Length: 373
Image (spheres, rainbow, N blue to C red):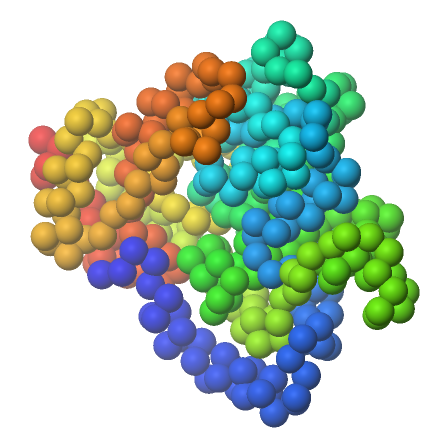
């Protein structure tokens, strides 16, 4: 059993993916080609925004967004404490300071109440000017943007949606990557929509920001290829990855998103009453980058993982250390994020992907229930 079975996915999509890769190889156009432009148009339409700007990876996407807003030294950016390192890393890369915000105990996403509190107290703990909020769509579930957006805008802060894990999720009639002033996603292979290497994208309705982001991703170029009007990056999605993503986007929209939600529903039905299953609030849809349970007895997590591994059941821990406990941020003021700290000790992610079978889910659930008794 694979944690996220990319080989099984490839076997299902093999004829179309092979053809797409061969077409790119035969075209002789490998960088910033029509394949990239076509994919960007499809992605923008799927998400429901005016512009999609692809780039080399999800971390670059976050960094480019902050660069677009001229975030730098002396600025404060509010980041959830329970997330992947890149969400906060890019803030430091810009020379700004990340301020860590606790998360909701049910959804694991950034807590609007604690965000309001951390904004109010930032001036007493940090030397800097609040500039932006990064909200992460953790494990596939969009953050509570109905509450977060008003808070950000009340304080004059940009809202950056980190949808690296959230592509395909939704809140009401809107899809993930449409909620931020700028939103980003990652096409890392294990993400809900992944390529066969690294890749990322940004989404926005702003014509001005879209134009600036297109310049920043290619060395800050101007209207002429060799007239560089600003300092940028070399951060382009290549044509081969774009062609693969084009095929996988069709499969994702047509059946994969539904299939992974069915898998999650089966897990939740089988595990109900035995452990704390993921919470999907009314009106939300997750794209299930991870299916993460919360253990009542965290001290048994390592032993449980070892027992499952001997049965051929892989598991993972996302994330064993919150942001405020990362060595790289040791010099920042102490952060009070008790929920994030608790989750880091008690979460456990189970195998899930669109091609997992009902029998495999039953096997995982049965093994867990037996060990919870």
